[in-house]
Image 1 (cartoon, helix red, strand yellow):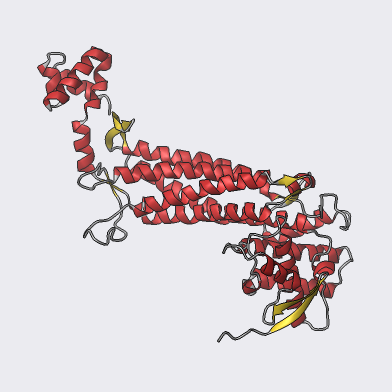
Image 2: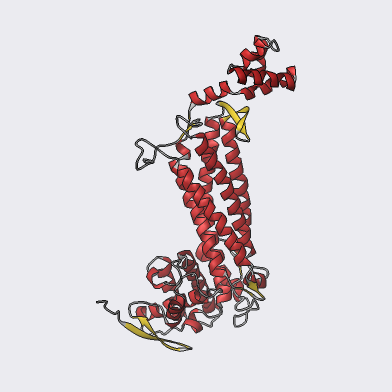
Length: 456
């Protein structure tokens, strides 16, 4: 027999609502829970933290303008600090699938602050709209929280972990700089290069996209706080925007500024789309790198086998001794998800009508997932695969010696057609290029050795 939990009565403009007695949320949050029973995707906790920063910054600003008492300001700030210190997470139950403006989540935090404040101080009564949401609207608060959460995630997690992997590839390029191997184009043998040169390419790709990511991410520092409902600042004191954003900067330690045009940031989220595109580009780079590495490590006896990867875990429930390139597979799956998220973010940004984009929760949910997945997967791939990559020197040398593509080095001396004849004869008779060249009388032994060595 299921025991019913105790309830309390909360009120909003539509009337009374029953809310679990042990929860701090109020009527509007409960209505959202009742009306949007969709999926399992909760509003990201990073957004809740960012909203707490905005609420605290707004309270401090309203107090400085003299439109919120010091007692109320102090109480709001105290509850916001509890939210920021992970003490009230259970009181934010809403799913991503709600109002496209994030209104329900904005009211969720307003109600939690109000009801938690009653416990902390019974002498002061806060109102979720008139006090906690003073000088604000969901329409400027939620996109501000989107920018704060996105920037903090990129700067504190995503970018540092991509840099770690980039540095590892840089080190590997130095470690392998003198190890000559056969190159491959079209999946077939090509002229030689060093394994270090190959890894330097990976590092360079990551550095380029990292530079773009760092540069464009700075646009997230622009906040539309003070724009209220449509960007005009209705019901907010003049210069509230500047003071509120200054307080956000003090609370976060990052240099946020007021966006030059609030109308643009309420109605569209172009910078998030742009950064998501960079994350997508990064995902395509990582898929290429992971695919290369697992192919080079294939075998190990019956594949290419030029790289040796760390043995992290058994690879099969039926085949003893099998070890698989699981970190490569993980990275490819993660990056596939990020590419899909970018499509969703793009579609979400198209859903702006007039003065408001109405896919804000969708956009930020997918963006934060992409940023977090990249941070986690780059760290995992670095620690559990990239650092431990070793060159299988004997296989690399054997493949190099067997390759007919070395004949390319003879082109400047004997011409393309004669070089091709040497290669075809060597392949047909299964002999070395050197033996084929001498046998056909096209190259002397000493010249062959000299011209081939010039490749290295």
